[in-house]
Length: 85
Picture (cartoon, one colour):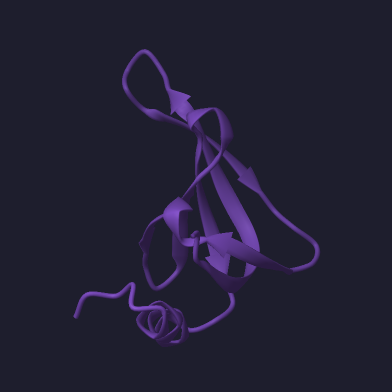
């Protein structure tokens, strides 16, 4: 059974792959309104103080800015027994 967390996202970056010099091809997306999302835990690659790195379709990676605190996300993961401390 998949597990999910709720997160409020803002602006984000989409990594579309790499160029001939192995540099990431990044698209920056600026949003006008934040969006509440229910995200499958298995899509999350990492969480930093500013971004949640998630997998997307077609092998893309996305860096989402989020509104919650880092500690709030830790609590959500810990509550679901998904955080190793």
